[in-house]
Amino acid sequence: MSILIIAEEHPSSFSAITPALVSAGCQLDKDIHVLVVGEHHAALAQQAAAISGVTRVLEAPQAIYARGAAENNAALIADLASQYSHILASTTTRGKNILPRAAGLLNCAPISDVIAIESIDTFIRPIYAGNARATVQCLSPIKFMTVRASSFVKAPEGTDVAPIIPVTAAFDLKLSEWINCESVPSERPELGSARVVISGGRGLGSAENFQLLSGIANLLHAALGASRAAVDAGFVPNDYQVGQTGKIVAPDLYIAVGISGAIQHLAGMKDSKVIVAINKDPDAPIFQVADYGWVGDLFEILPQLESELKKIL
Amino acid sequence: MRILVTVKRVIDPYARIRVRADHTGVETAHVKMAINPFDEIALEEAVRLKEKGDAKEVIVLSVGSCASQETLRGALALGADRATLIETDEDLQPLSVAKLIQAFLLIESCDVVLMGKQSIDGDHNQTGQLLAALLKWPQATFASKITPQGEYLEVVREVDEGLETLCVKRPAVITVDLRLNEPRYPTLPNIMKAKQKSLAVLKASEMNVDLQPQIKILRVDAPPVRKAGEKVNSAAELVQKLRNEAKVI
Ligand SMILES: Cc1cc2nc3c(=O)[nH]c(=O)nc-3n(C[C@H](O)[C@H](O)[C@H](O)COP(=O)(O)OP(=O)(O)OC[C@H]3O[C@@H](n4cnc5c(N)ncnc54)[C@H](O)[C@@H]3O)c2cc1C
Ligand SMILES: Nc1ncnc2c1ncn2[C@@H]1O[C@H](COP(=O)(O)O)[C@@H](O)[C@H]1O
Image (cartoon, rainbow over all chains, first blue to last red; front, top):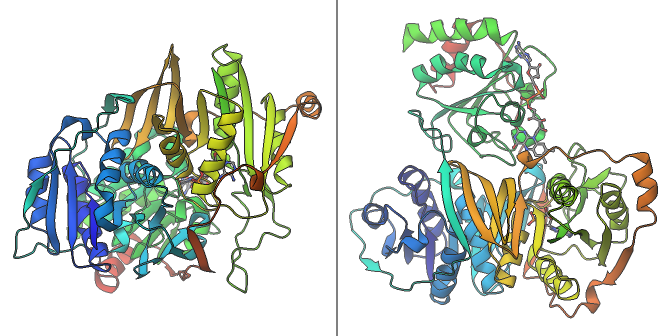
């Protein structure tokens, strides 16, 4: 049987995530189909067709599937599902919204946040905010799963181009209406896929002080992240939050500034390759996972770090 | 509007999690339990909607062991009108829980189900979406603001790109995120009053629902531990190590 991958809909998350889902899919079967929908369907279909391992692209151009519409997308996926053994989406808010609904329509039990594939029906996923890992076997006839992209290498661009097939089925359930999406545009790389992430916590003290991270972020081409406390306090928008209930990141370098290191925060970043922690409290739990810890006042440390980086970058 | 709020009893978010030596799960004996934090937020929202006159009644439902009665009493003290426990000693998976909630809605019709976006033990983030699928109702997940507008609910959702606004027609399933509200603390008079409120108990096995698990937990392991590294004392030292030792800049 074949594998269906539900592609991300935004071009930047598509390129950061979908190739990793393809490589996860390749661990299950050789016949990999990718479903693309949304405003950018044409460009994304081209990109999907070029990913190594992809054998077919399903392109649904209808506007009813755009902007993550959960009800319509789930109905479409459930309609396509009978041809597939596995259906994979990512652990983005989009994937988490749509995939379980599609599974529910077919009385299948979905599996969330897969970080490793043991066999065609056995998967590993974190539970308890990453404090434990469950190995689970799925007995559902079709395996619906969301996959943590940062746990899989990205499939490269291939030499062959897969055929692109239009999807004509139109499920317009009219159950909900999209009004708008407010996002703060940013020049920075995306949090989920950046090679370097620098995050601030309550210790930063204010939205203005978050600017202290910008200079360093610019020098390192880093994405900015935050703890829940910093988001709750209004220092930065909600989409900066890293952790159990925010974004899960695994960059090459993660710099935590004024963050204590609660387990819910660690759940979102402890798979980073190298972790740096800056905190004035030598007993802060963040130091237990940091490769390099610097105990001191962030307001003194950040300017020093910035000028030192300027010397070499 | 009649609101159903689902609440799950979970290990307290600040308790230490230890994996059992036999790898069948995590240690629950003598561990502090709590209402799932997201469900507490869902409940607070429902109670506020009732206080504003938007909702007529708030019913709370839990699926779990007899001990979940304590969680439901807590929910009654926070302002729910009535509670039901669907009792089971099995650790049911989201699909089975969703089917039980669906069956409950045949007994008690409600036009909004408010749920947490995620239970902090299994971290599934599925039950609301599954329930919405079974009921064929609209869903608005990860809500950080809910505004009733006649037959509709306007919901602001926390998504990866920022804040999205949806309008869903009732009946609907809404799952809530952390920033929706700050839950209140129960007062002593309300804790006393909660003792008089109705708490019904149904047996999961008698709900006429297929509870056959489709997922088998083969084993549970502790995650790989990350070792604490070294301390640095100057910018020059840190930058040098990041460049020459870790090779990440
Ligand atoms: C259900 C649930 C889900 C959650 N999900 C998340 C999540 O996804 N992500 C998340 O981050 N949290 C989450 N939390 C919250 C989490 O438990 C912590 O409360 C939060 O991470 C704390 O943020 P913080 O480290 O910024 O703040 P604090 O814990 O207050 O730490 C601030 C740190 O800054 C240091 N500091 C202060 N001033 C200075 C200075 N001048 N120089 C240097 N250091 C300084 C202090 O020593 C302290 O260590 C969740 C909680 C619950 C219950
Ligand atoms: N056993 C249960 N009893 C009551 N509500 C539950 C139960 N399991 C899940 N839920 C609800 O579903 C939400 C999402 O849970 P989950 O899909 O397990 O992450 C929770 O926040 C609860 O509101």
